[in-house]
Length: 60
Image (cartoon, rainbow, N blue to C red; front, side):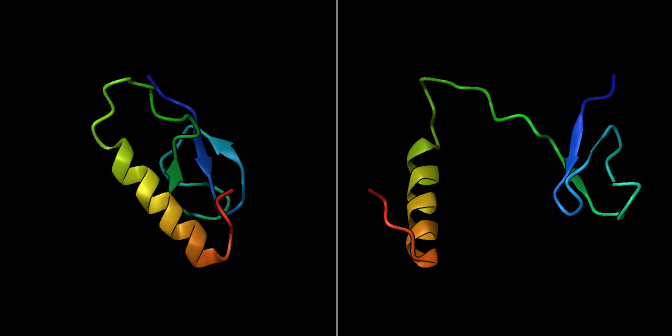
């Protein structure tokens, strides 16, 4: 069964793993499932905070 995919380069949806328009790799447009036992949540939030500070965004 094919799943919907998204091309970040040309911002189009497709069912292929590579975009037919620009040839870029496609990704799943769906967010990961939520789990209250998220083992990697602290690392993900720390990385996001570091990236936002690097880009000049304030976190509050």
